[in-house]
Structure formats: C-alpha cells, structure tokens
Image 1 (cartoon, rainbow over the protein chains, first blue to last red):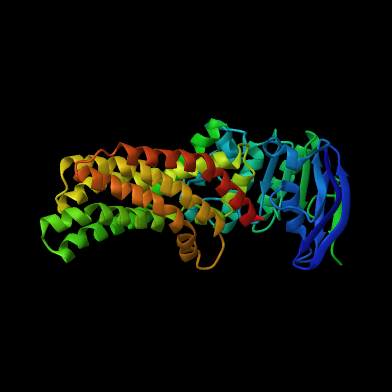
Image 2 (image 1 turned 45 degrees about the horizontal axis):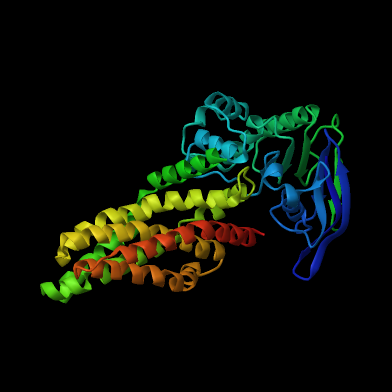
Length: 206
Length: 222
C-alpha cells in the first residue's frame, strides 16, 4: 500500500500543492492530471524519493520511504521523462543493466521476451543511437515487462512518443499488473486507460 | 549488493570502450604535456632529472582532472543517474563502482605510460619504479576526491572550472607526496614514508569520498 500524508511541494516561493493525502491499496491505478507546471512530475519524483517534499511523508506498507530506502527501491520501477537509455549500448544491454540496477536481474531470455513484447525484436542488438525517439521510449518501457514482480510502477508520461500499437501494449501491461495486485501511478493529459479499468484521478493545480 | 557493483563497473567500462575518443583525449593530453617539457627546456640531463617528477605528476594530475567531467555528466543528461539513485544498492556503492571504472580507463593508463615518458627525462630505474608506485597510489585518490567535485557541480554552467577550483586544494597533498617520493628515490633516500602517507590518503579517500559524492548527487538531483 502506498500512502501519502499531508504532502506539500514548493517550487521557489510558490506552493505547487499542499495538504495532499491519498492511499493506494494493492491493485489500484492512479492517474495524476493537471496543466503544465502544475507539479505532476514533482509529485512523482517525491513518490519515488528522488525529491524531498517541503512537508509531509510518503509511506510504503506503513513505513516512511526515507527509512526504507533501498528496500523500497527494490519494489519500485520508475520511468521518468528522460528514458535513461544509453546511446552506446544496445537495447538488450540497456534493459539488462537497468533491471540489474533495480535489483531484479533478468537473464537473456527474459530480456529478449521483454523487448519482443514492446515490439523491438528486430532492433534489440542495435545501439540505441540508431533508434527513433519512440523506440528508445519502448526500450525504457520494456523494463515493465521484465520486472513484472516489482510491486509499484511510477510512470511519467508513459504514452508520449508512442504509436497506437505501443500504447495498446503499455495499457495491456498496466492492466495485467493491476490484476496481479500491483500499484501503478502515472501522469497523462488524456484519459488513456480503457473504460474497463477504474482509475483514481488527482487533478493538480487549477 | 556486489552484483550491482559488478554491473556498474561492467557498464561503465563498456561505455568507455564504445566512446574511446573521450578516453584518448585525456591520455593524449598527458603524453603531449610530458613530452613537450624536455623539448622546451633543452637537453641538460641534470635539469631534466630535477624537474621530471614534478612535470610528470602535474601532467598526470591535470589529465585526471580533465577526465572528471565524464564521470557523471552523461548519466545526468540522459536520466541514467536518476535510475542509479533508485537502485537496489546504496548510492555510495554505485559511486565506488563508477570511480573504479573511471580509474581503470583514466588512471591506470597514465600509470602505465608514465615510465615510458619518464625515459625522456633520464630518470634512474629506481626512481621510475617509485614513480609508477606513487601514481598507482595517488591517481585513485585523485579520482575519488574528484568524484565529489564532479557530483557537486552537476548541471551547473561552467562546471569544469568550478570542479577544478573545488578539488585542486585537495589534490595538492597527493601531488606533494607523489613528487617528493620520486625525488627521494632519485636522491637515494628511503621512500617508504611518502608511499605510506599516500596509502593512508587513499584509504581515507576510499572510505569517505564515495559517501560524500553520493550525498552531493542527491542534492544535485533534488
């Protein structure tokens, strides 16, 4: 369970949000919406522990993530704005490294299957330099397929730069993850998940 | 946990292998500086022997500083550093991994090239060995201390100059100990004390620098 208590985030002198509270039980999907600059990415970075809130706390299974640290990181997949895909490495190497760093080492078969799942089977051994923007994004998202057992997924604009097939694939992975009892938090401007899945929505700003 | 360390070292070595030009830059700089001095100063053997330790050590120090920018900047730009902050191992350990990989491609070659360059200065064999030993102990310290400066100046404009200003004062003891070790060897005095002090410095840097750099990275990415 992911719990947020009385969260306040400031940028400069301005408060982006204040007194934010929510609880996400297993199997919950949360969409964070809001205008540009309303603090969507800031909220996600706070949820990961990359940034510190001005006030309040984020708790995982009842314990503060600041106390859990690596313990929490092991159960978290964060895919940010920057895809963290190295130009010099191939898709396969990129995925293997990011899985190993996250604490869920993936063998060659898992990596291959994950890349195939996101439709990169023909490009797995090409240096990422030669991939298009959307394809690099897919390399990053392939981590979701390789780290199914990781409980919490935090995705910053997962659908940008993707074509419709890839969007469908990501939606499918998210739906499967929710069925397994995983928790997904993502930001998006559009209602992208189908009507069959109920998502909590937080509207920031405004 | 040590699996993560191995992955980070392997990854960084692979990246350097595929970006050889970057690695070669600092090495070429080292070779050029150390080779231009004998040409500029003239062929007076005594003078060359006197300036050799200082020139080679200063060149090595500058070359190692030149390479510092590479340590975190690329990972910072493409978001890989964020993922390292969220890794399943403590960030300090990842910094150690990055420092080891960085030293293997920037410090180790300096150490291996130094005796060849020192031939131009007519250094005696004993002094050559001490030069290699002092670089073997000194350059890892430079990398470790430099990692703090590189982490602190991430994302700052003109970070190269700022890094130099930050780490130079901490580099000075290593430089003094390193050159005086080689001087002592050339003069036939025992060098044990110098090398032991360099070792102490390395242990100290190894124990504290990664955690300081980790804290600096967290601040830079907040």
